[in-house]
Length: 278
Image (cartoon, rainbow, N blue to C red; front, side, top):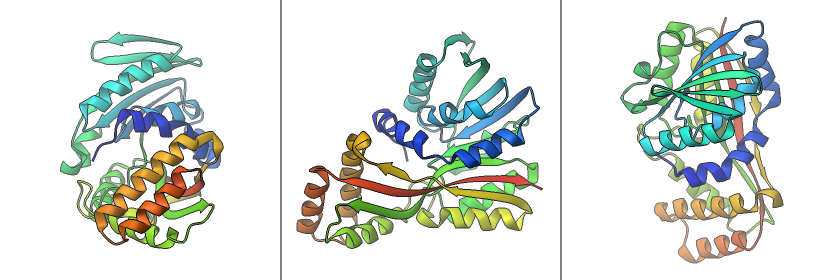
């Protein structure tokens, strides 16, 4: 499953505002005192997670951005170069100067469904991801956690959907729409039947079984007037997913969507997680 660069650009400010500052501080504390760190970002999209995480990490950073979509990897390269204070090419890699940090970025195309192990280089210190694990299957999560545990690698992941959505003003179809959306969430997104809102709990259980310390914190989107365009796009995508299930009458979907497009605020629940081997 892939997303458009335009959608990822629209959601990035809300993503960065939502992530837990407490867990980001825990990441910073874990790597404090180090001069350098090697990071792998899975399902990198257009590079938003690097931009949201770099300030918590040491002065020298090597990132490997992994995605299946070559168009998103190209967008990541372009947007990171524009975001940095200075950028230069080093062969296939991009070297960025940002806020006193030197960030070297490699771009790696990989099908994570074929197995995440080949995306993780031997020198990795940290694995990251954003808005990924609700899309993968429970079996994939178990395999992934086992791979990390075998190598004693920490994971910092943000914005895993937790299944809660609250729209303001309320609408009579809200509950039916959410139930249908959850049914759509459980369909195959390319990794087998998706974990959907169960993802965070499944990850906590899998990591706990391997002896990891797991810290977690809420990271909800709060889509007020600042994020009106994102709320409208979210509503349209939500309605589209519900229509695919056939579980809500079309008249109810259309009325719900018209109400949301006319103006609504929304809170969408997510969770951040930092798992560290003991």
